[in-house]
Length: 465
Image 1 (cartoon, rainbow, N blue to C red):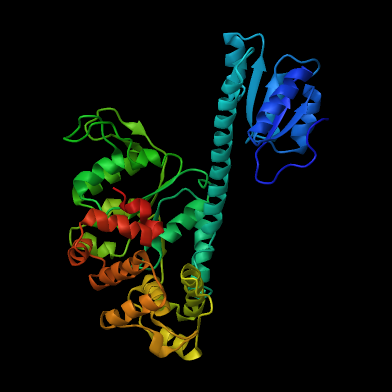
Image 2 (spheres, rainbow, N blue to C red):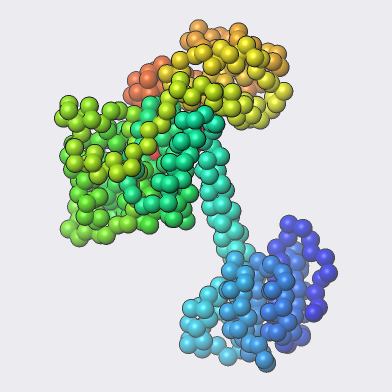
């Protein structure tokens, strides 16, 4: 087997397979000038061995070769190196052969004679395609690992029971209703259920029912056809269809109007959606996970929530304990958030004194984990020494505004970092009421949703629309 012995780190590798030695040498020369690692073999048999032993971004192979031809090299690569892009070359190009090659999984089919600029352009596209596939695989792996209980922190009995319940629930496809106060981590639990279950390779689509008016929410959920209403210049699939095969997470379901609740109930029962303005229903296969901080039985009594929808959603209820009921988890959470924000601020020497932890554990935490996270971020901004004591905990943020600015100046914080903290404080002051918070901030609600999605990435998809 010919080719370079040492591959340059960080450079994409290409395998050229051609029994025409001159053609192989020409391709190697051209591709190496483009700074690719190139290996050349003169037979399909040698190519199979090379593919078995090495990972190539692109495989360029002639089709007509003795013993093992290019189509067989393609088949082998599809089985052993599915991320590799295979480009087939032949001097006997026919439509039937091209169709067969593309059906077999080839990235591209090119006939001789060809221009070198042409094949270089195809190789560049193949490299980009290969990189996207690898990034997608890594992203899916990262997302799965992130929500394998690693982001749900706690060792208290209440949390251990929650982990056990998530494990059992994730293995099913039943609808789930997550109940818990603001800041308890409802969306995080929904993701843990999804990414630890049989639907983990399919989409997880979150939508915040409180962030979108019912008129728009119906279109977001079910889709619409072109011309269904003013501004509908194109058809829209809708979130239920986007979640096909996966999970749709309906956050703050109790904020949805009664009319739309009835339509959600029909979707769950019939397992089909009809887009706004459309007449044809489409079958769906999406697990429904809903969440609310309200007592739905009370909402039913008040006439604000449909009883039958409650029963459809409440197949498996998950109650999230407030932080005040799992005080023993506070030191772990403090350590987690301290590490997170210390790294962001390049100030990794900070720690809490025993007295500070004791004060944190005695606080009522009406805002739960989110309130704790916000307070720790503020404490890092305001504190001066490496060890944070009780006096460094800003439980009354409204009286600390000048100190907050001085702390930001001392730490050379960016305007973006300071803005995030201020937006969190305003949202806390207004109890999460977006319209009121937007007025205080002097921005519109859409801008606030966009900024909030950067502060709380778990809610990003919920507030895009």
